Image: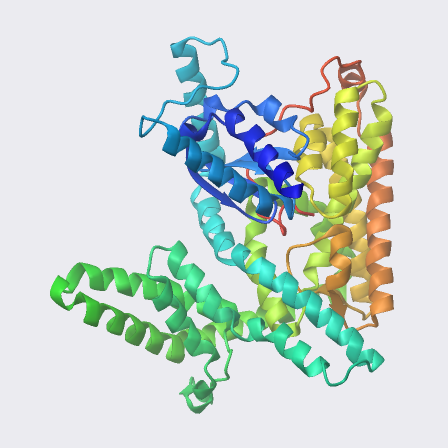
Length: 507
């Protein structure tokens, strides 16, 4: 039954994105089906966003992203791939010219102008060097999130069992399962980094593996012995990038007859030596500084820092700058076992939920917006924020700002707890909202941490609701939107910098 439902969702999406001939690539992340398109103008945004299974649509300079939600996207994507492959196989033309299900009555010139304008706008907004670099960084770490989540939940469950004295013969096995991935995370970072920067993945992994090899303890660098794991994910990232450049240099200058022997040898040797006698020490100092700064920031100015971080996270998501936080989260988890920043940033989603509830009450006649809110709120409570951001608050404008204010108050409360000497962190990046409860960790009992995080969420909900209800609408905005809507379709999807869940728009 579920399989038929997923196939039906895939079948409904395919014609609305221009058919199989309009698809150049198919992939998915935690919540989104990511499509490469030949002709963006063939996509029927309104009909696509109105599908029951679709929570929203987002696009960047290279992909069109359909938000289906966690779990669902992993099941729909294979069905979609099967339909696309079947359509291509059945077609007599290798590259068929796709036709939209309901052609837009535009002339050829108008269609070309519309496509050119869209392409120019997206290129200007999203293809900046900084954003492209941050997107590469995100592409390195995002594939690791499922393992971080799974191992993080097992670690939390194991800690609970140890504290309660349950099954002492089993808890060591659970500890090994939970920590094995983190012990070798540098290798996976090296593999993904090399792949993302155009090198041979296994060479990047081989160089990064040096960082976690126990034998480095016998090596002195800068007058002191190295420690296995020193430099962590930052060192692995730097080592793998260096390996890519060494490999590319070798490919240019090594004769083809010797390439298979000389190139990998020089790549590993040169990159490995630089890693051992330079990168591990430097990256270790940077990693330590990141941890020390996070601790200092929250211990001395936790309330103010939490207020700022919780309030600015949604704008960072819209600008694509949130991706710079992913290595910081991972470094903190590697060092301390949890990241104290994620519970604070998750408050942005609470403000978003509260703001959406206020919009629902303030626009009693707008059935379109209210329908979108009712369908998107459950996902919002679980930390999937794209439907509310792109379908409600951002199109309305001012409610997006008041949602940020709600997140600021929630973040301030969680930050205050850190300032008072406690700490509430997450053992993994990815989930937020209610879904973050199983991943909570810190220096307090689980009961205290749950209470603090829940209090932050409630504060975000209430603040986001009150500020939006009383200050989220001007008279003109109410006059424009509090009207009867004959068309029940949700608001126009908003394009912009996509958030790479879940430390992005999944808040």
